[in-house]
Length: 435
Image (tube, rainbow, N blue to C red; front, side):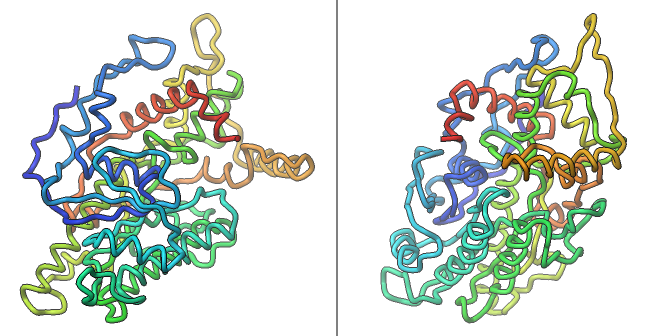
């Protein structure tokens, strides 16, 4: 069993506004800021998954004992979301608003008076182009403008007001052309805009550009900005990412299908536990506040910050720093859900690898069938590509400049994902999603 880490003194971030705080990443961010009140209602307990209870048993320490803590007298947490009916956490104040509506945002900002804004709002990858453009691009632009005082003061005393730190949740996919191998890719890779295959990634890249261009701009009151690019987020509450998709496939598919593999199976893939993503966002926010303080103390535009220390105006990739073989991850999720593939006489009959070229043809045929029937299948040419290429990143920059180290490992992250998904389907979650 992993031992809890020795924690530093509790941190204080002032008044924090988490935009999209009722969503997947946002909910974990709020929980972490409040020192994990969720664990009071669902305390850690030994966990058994899969068909062999003794083989797949886990006993993890609490999240609270391992992540940094926050001084609740010096940290006040607010959430802004379009609807605040789910993922609510005791100790947080909730506000409903449309992030593309200036008047609604100004009303919230006047009430909250945030020092820090962390934007986690984002539609699902599969959302329409109109929704992706509205939320990821238009919403981010409007948030920046209101936070930076472009649309007038939101201070209670009538003075010009801007928040000190604006942290944006981007995506590691902004540097990927969707076809090529990415091996230990870092922030020096150029943004891929336009992106003809993934409009989601294109809108994320454009939004990131807006955020970083706003850094220290007089138009935005000198507000400091930065972006965090997570890779392959996994964890409790994921309803559209890697772990969710694979576990759902494992739950529904027959055993023979679970024995199939696309490609040779030697391609590496990055995943990141959602709590580690939240930690990365908070460390960047803390760094921006420190920079803002140094600028004010020293009276210099850069606060005496050296280039290798710089956080404002920067993008940071965050991963678990633990890439693994894509198909090993996939079969791990299958097995923890209780699916071991085709088993004869107590033994798995073995993996059957389909050549990538043949799998690509299968994906193309599945796409055609989807067009003819009006039903989108789970396999496509693009899913074949992602199942066969290397796609992993370097998170050395955020480690060096912000002191980031992943707290929860990939195995535990996947186990937590499966545990959550089991509870989700038992509660009729898939049926509720369809309604």
